[in-house]
Length: 306
Image (cartoon, rainbow, N blue to C red):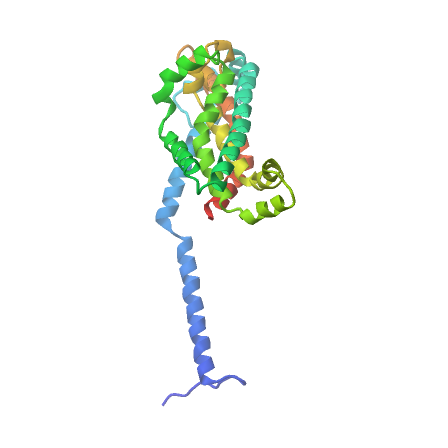
């Protein structure tokens, strides 16, 4: 003989059964969440990916602060003892770091500004005239250009820039803008489709021209995606080696990545100097990305909503 537990005042047997079922469902959901937190295969893959980046970065930092004798002792993972900055001093002098840094900053700045402006202009025209065949096929034409890497077109680009007198950092910046245009237009177009056209129609009713609508209404709304496009353009320009090495004819106007090549030939045994130079060259890109990565994710996420 079994005894039934007394019901609480104001409840029925059906209500009690429903509450028990609800508690069971909540328990299952809680267990599911706890199980999702310990997804070991994904965790292991993420750890390995993180180590593939952190371990070389650790070696670069430790080698840069070692002396010349410590750098060649065969123990790359040991900490510097004593702590030395001689490698940075020699790398600063050998690469003429202030000049090369200024050239790299100039090229990257022109690339970022030019890419944001041209890509936003192009994407706005395409997104608001998508029903017209010319603009639609222009978009597909730009997307097709993404499959043409610079090494395939290197010979023709070197010849053309030489004939046009653009075999200098300014010509490198122009080519960087052109090769970043396709991907940037893709991002801007996807983002513009999520902006209601009614906002622009109301501005036109108030008498705004197309230029006023773009600069005063649309372009400020493109700020998250502009930050994303600018960061991608900066990283691509700052880390590029092939294009400046082939286009720029004056060795005194080369960018930092090109000047790093001397440490693989003439100073190949000075590991502390080499890694100090590499660290100085990559530091600006790392700092920029660390402070702007949230805008990258925000821009890509908002652009993918539509």
